[in-house]
Length: 100
Image (tube, rainbow, N blue to C red; front, side):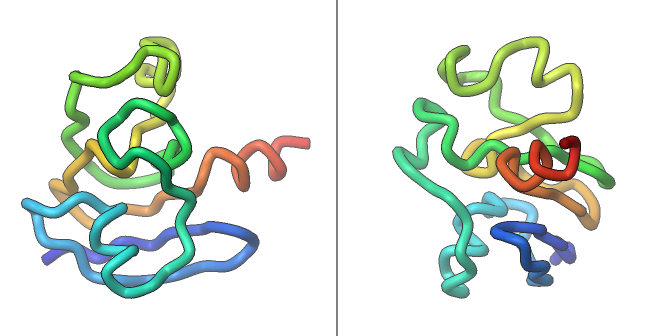
């Protein structure tokens, strides 16, 4: 199990995530408020910026939901990624607010 620290909606949450479970699924199972939509990589609602940690990102996704440039810049879809270490992630919405 890996520890995930999620910053979402102005709050910070810590939870455990198995290596075969997406951070989105693990958060939703604990009723942690993370934006979600299709849960298959098509809508981009669960886009996160990975601040720290190692992960695998499923490359089968909508490029409108996550562009190659975003992927190269540390963004991922929480519904299509799996942790390979402890993770620190922030929702794209919260990250954009910090940049202003």
